[in-house]
Image (cartoon, rainbow, N blue to C red; front, side, top):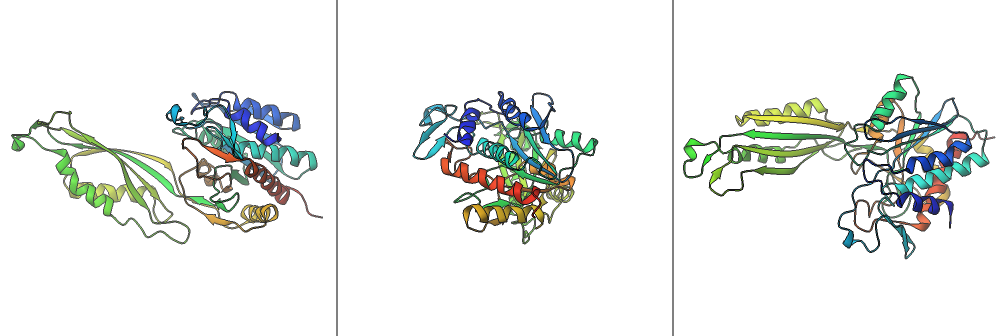
Length: 378
């Protein structure tokens, strides 16, 4: 059994449903501290965070990941227990296999081999882990970055091990992400009897024209790096459950995944304008999950492209699709950030899995990226 597979099986067996870590970070520290990595715990609230660093000089390359996983869903739907790593047909099954314990295992073994072969590498290597990426992400990487910024500890290059690959390992790397802005909207009306609508104010009817306008609004046309901004309603509810009562309020949730053509402030302004135009009485609570970011072509992207080509023999594609990641907290510091990891086909699904061969390919790519960045060519 390869070291990468062995480590991944150990990590999957730990039921680290967000925001739990269940000792995963202890395992990583036990692997890296003997290699000369310093260990620092930066825990906030119920979130476990660890910062492991080898070296004190720049440039600083950081592997970023999360040890927490999403809930399993119905256990009876799994072909094997989700926290009992099981090999079938050349794949390892278990919750977190692809998102993202597979990436973690691959970069830990990549670091182990790299340090053994290049103990006097230039610069520094760090591993940053959190246990709340799959949750609300308020006490994880965002807090660790704040701590690093306060002491002027700067990351130059960051590789997030999220599952970015599409058909085969390394065919896609994420070089940016859209922003994510969430809203909880309450439309205020007046409850009453359905037989006396003149004595009530139905918030469902009131909201209908605004809902149509919000969902049909052309927020922007995107650009060469990002698709157009999209507003999606995720939930609407109103009423008491009784068929003869006009509800007194309506609650709605929606999200905008926005590109670099928009800002948080501009989106809010346009949403309020649409709601105000309809004469609605409303309350709205906003939550910015992250602003969009884009890493332009440079040293990190070039090193990743060269590593993928060297290991797999094919060229990769730069992309900005998908959801958000903790890279959104690193990019504003000025660091170059990319995401490169396992296939994303099974993430968050029942019977999540990763290919055994894919693990070794990914670990080799990670090691070669370190070589490309931290070994001085003669």
